[in-house]
Length: 91
Image (spheres, one colour):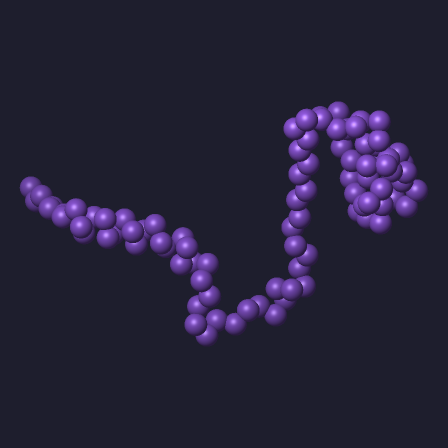
């Protein structure tokens, strides 16, 4: 049987390199050119709303869909985007 003896220093050096590998994958490679179609794809977006102390429910509503959607007073600032909004109720 062979026994392998690793010093603590060698183990920690190897551990440091293994921790850096995922970070190094995000670095640009020298000579690597960005894809031509990279800017043509739409970004993925997420909106999360949290109301720790509650909200004024009488003004937080939307009726209808698309251009005809009526928004409450709370949602008035985002009225220009009403065609792109989706309201999910009853969760």
